[in-house]
Length: 80
Image 1: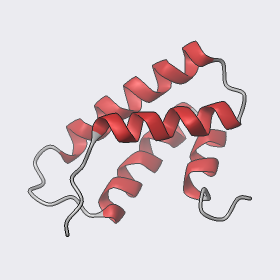
Image 2: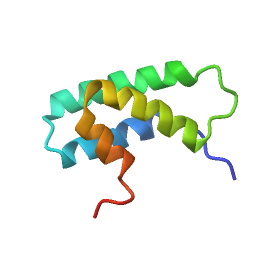
Image 3: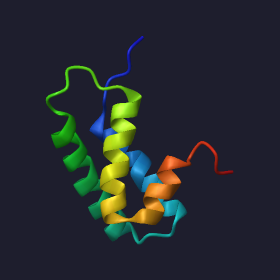
Image 4: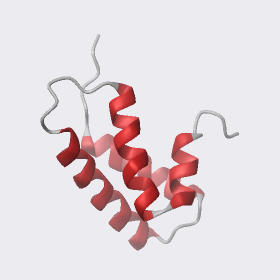
């Protein structure tokens, strides 16, 4: 079964990761909104979005706005 890209889910996941870093909620919401909007824009012409496509696009944006948040997102499956 194919997964459907959900900007709402991506935003929620970014907010959870930001909370883990104690990023103030206002800044975290701003980051999440900007990143989600830019990722949607960069992937809008793709008919099929793979997990790798999404991860690459997110990491590109995350590194622009907050390197620590990018690190946590990239290693979220490895961090205990």
